[in-house]
Length: 251
Length: 251
Image 1: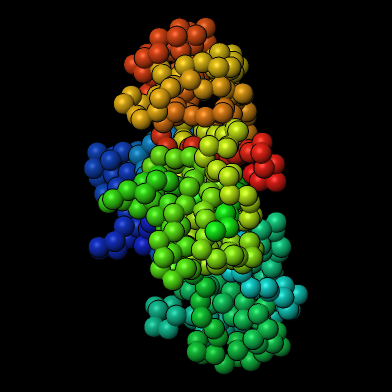
Image 2: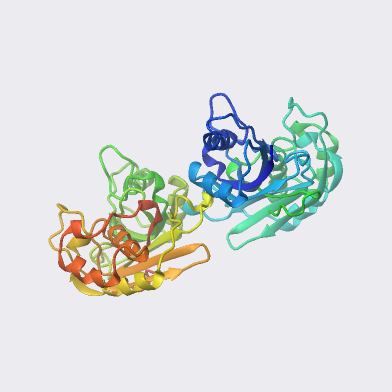
């Protein structure tokens, strides 16, 4: 069976996340349903590059799937775009060797979190509206403490099924835009809820409620209650994924 | 009672249009509710610059209202932004003389209709996704026939309460963008459903199904059944309003 990698994007507003669930709609279910229809209602499994939570978006996402027939990649993308709802889109597909895995072989993941400083109806589902002034320099000072290989238990949902909370953060920085700012963070892996807990904590720094120098202590505590409240899902985008073993997968 | 002009914007996706209705939510109702709360639950009436249909957006909109107390305009904007849902935003307010009317004194209205050529989850509620190739030159040829003072009955919903279907169209043109194209049309007034019926007809020209030279005949027929199917609401934005009598109202 040929293995295909497929690049897609989705607006997470109306999904209960990527992963299939018994009683809620998910991106995975919509795509598996479409692939099933394309293959005589055979059950087709797909493997995503990661799980996104309810309401979180993906500007770029990769999945792999082993299909019972060979496809022209462009034709596969065309069909999938027609057979899925308007909040999921497909941009490219590749046939790749069958030992490359969308989740285990992703070498880095990048997320962005968007904060909008003005009430704007047209970006309300794609950013968090926060009117207060933020000290971006202090937030960037704090963000530097996130770099490197560390245990991120202070920013993780407890009782999840992962074996370790150690992640390697490659970069973490705030950038100003015309209408607000965004946080970009790249790492080899992320824990559940981690980016939103980190952003919530850095915003406390930006508001002057805690100091940038308190970050090392918060991380060292390895205790979720030491960090601050998570920011809302609608500002978060899975932005970029890289595969060192397959540099042709761009996005 | 001082008269205020207020500039706002709204995403029409979840509204049954501007105008108050007995059993559906409207932009007008949300704003009147907020203004009522700001004035001890007194009933406050507002007058909008025009009616937009269900699902149509406004990038710029003006209303006027006579308030029982004097306000600092910036304070009024601030309060309204806090007391209305995320899909309505207020940008500016002015205290103006009480004979200026938001609807009757608007000298021109401009609409834009956005067509997106690629399936894109993040603009799906703010454009119409149409994959087919469009001949933009032919569409612009056709659009020229709309200019001037003419009876637009062929593009009007029948049985509405207006006395005349004559409008003066100042400009009508298609523009290409990175992801598709948009149609911009300015006129002294618009009939109900008029822009969407015009765009639907121009798209038929763009698809090569009718000729640009057929437009004068379609207009002259003064019969809605001579024109083509209206395009969906989510691509349409009320974009700009001008008041010759009050040039300070920008937007």
